[in-house]
Amino acid sequence: MIPFITEFVHNNLFLIISLYLIIFHSSTMTAQSKRVVGYFANWTIYRDGFTPEAIPAHQLTHINYAFLNLANDKGDLVFTDTWADIEKPWPGDNDSQPFKGNIWQLTAPNGCVKKKNPNIKILFSVGGWTLSEHFSNVAKNEEASERFASQITYYIRKYGFDGVGKYRCNLFSFNFEIDYCIIII
Image 1 (cartoon, helix red, strand yellow):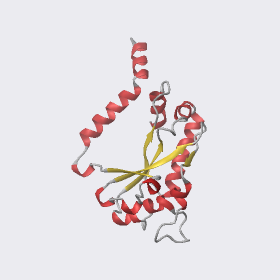
Image 2 (cartoon, one colour):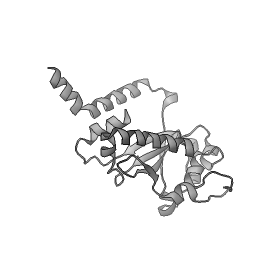
Image 3 (tube, rainbow, N blue to C red):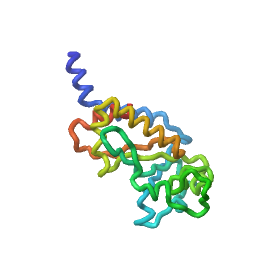
Image 4 (cartoon, rainbow, N blue to C red):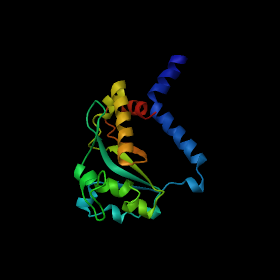
């Protein structure tokens, strides 16, 4: 009987954890804890002309900034567009800032988003449909998983993010769900 339970839990770990989180979070949410989450992709400044200034920050509690890339099987994170992310000058920027770009406008207390809503949480997203090839291998390797966690901490501290919002993944790799849970637990 025990091997059956172990196998069931192993094969359904992602589902079990997901259900637990859904049940736990939905039963404990109050009116004050509701989240209104926006999504800002770095490429929108080119394609849609949608800038950080245009974000209706006063209507949001969180913004997920997309994307950072899990660049290799070692667990290294990189920006997907360094110029848009941390180099592009925006009106009001100055040379004394440690970085510029979309991220400054989102995370800095005097950036356009935090000026509108000082309590908004800015999170970054990792991966994406085309940037998820390394997740499974990183999850299988303890050293790579530790490097990935260290990289997340580095980006949060250096660029003023409030945390990681989500990982976007292509779920076509075998046993990906279990590997993915190992990373995020």
